[in-house]
Amino acid sequence: MTTSAFLLEATGIRKSFGATSVLRGVDLRIAPGEIHALLGGNGAGKSTLIRIASGSLRRDAGSLSILDDGPHPIAVVFQELALLPHLSVAENIYLPRLRQGFVPVRAADRRKEARAALAQIDERLAREALDRPVAEIDLHERQLIEIARALGSGARLLFLDEPTANLTFAESERLFAILRRLAGQGISTLLVSHRMKEIRAVADVCTILRDGRTVVDRQPLATLDDASIVEAMGQKAASRAAPGPSTPCSAGSRPGAGTTVGIEGQGLSLTLEPGTILGLAGAPAGPGQLIDALVGAAPDSDWNVTMNGAAADLRSPARAVRQGIGYVSGDRAEKGLLTTLPILDNVVAATRVATRRWLARRPEATVAGDALARLAIKANSVDDSPLTLSGGTQQKLLLARWLEIPPRVLVLEEPTRGVDIGTKREIYALIREMAVLGTVVVWWSTEFPELIEICDRVIAFDLRGEVSGVIAGAQVNEVALARATGMAA
Image (tube, one colour):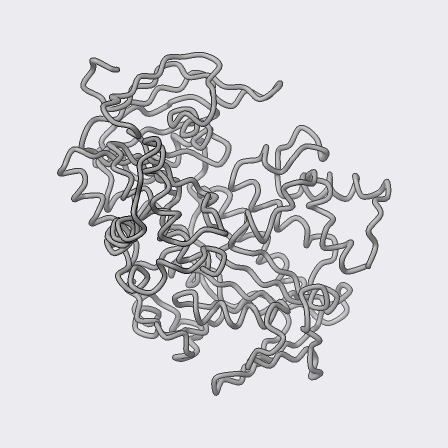
């Protein structure tokens, strides 16, 4: 038990995985009742530090002391969610309480406590979903459930790793209000986020990691501007690109180029010329239905898709890939990464499906290596597990698998979720490059500035999941998107 004024005090923390040194002497101190931002680029060591501080990973060196006056002083929401899909929502929320040992618990009491925790963030979900298996809940709602579990655990210190990555603006604001209230009760939050607007809205102080070391230690955010933070992270502050249409390519510039895509549904009829970047704005229900139709996950969808005037065969995800439709899921843990296979197989997976070739051939190692180099993905070997990569690097890995085909249509769900500023810019550049070569890009994001910067047109969906309009060109701005979606800018 620490005798200092801090809930948590870590000094000189070191951690290596084989020959790779991830933490090289990290310091972190969190005081009672503060919201503390932990910042750093992808691969800086933030997630590793959280796992060590929360006890799920052993450190190699350094000291760690925690003010421990309860059965579970720390609750963690990791970037990759850790819910048990076969259990109900209520059972998942109540799980941390079971660490207290064998204590008889009535089902009614369990539901009552779970409902109270979830209702803090989403009253409707607390009212309707407590008895549903988590497997039936979408990613957006799972994020709320995971956060509710942490809030209801009774912990003195919350570690939240990109907690708003799948939340709407209104849900994020409710979460921040809760964190502020908890801070007033002496409960602290360590918040990891790459969204500087959020960080400034809610956090008091920050610690910045760079290459596994602490470069800024407990500095008030009010004393740092964004440029200083980006510089401390070891990244360049990229200038904002002017929004506007991508440069379409001519048919025949590469295989699959020149495809015109038609989308019809909910009274909307839209034609997307080669090189168009189409944004989808709104809460998950509306964009999710269209995305499922595009990638073959909803063969009976009311949405109709044509390619060069002919109906696309989207009866399954495999058929969609063979039609030339690529997909990067927002849920990289369950629908994206092949976690039991090495990086090599992850990179060439789409090519194997598209060509119906499943046996590895020697050139695949070269193809995978070239893709990693093109996206600046640092890995010791293509035979390593993708789980050895940071969250942002995993996101780039999902994009890498479409470089060899490349797709006629690329569908993206929150492709910059949980990535740093530098990686975000790299993804923007890659998507623009693919669009210039003729790929039609469909991009769903809950970040309005991202849609404004990257998209030619945006389909807006209201809170019921219905199309509320199409916004194009200079009309794509935060006010217009907020009005059309019912979500605050």
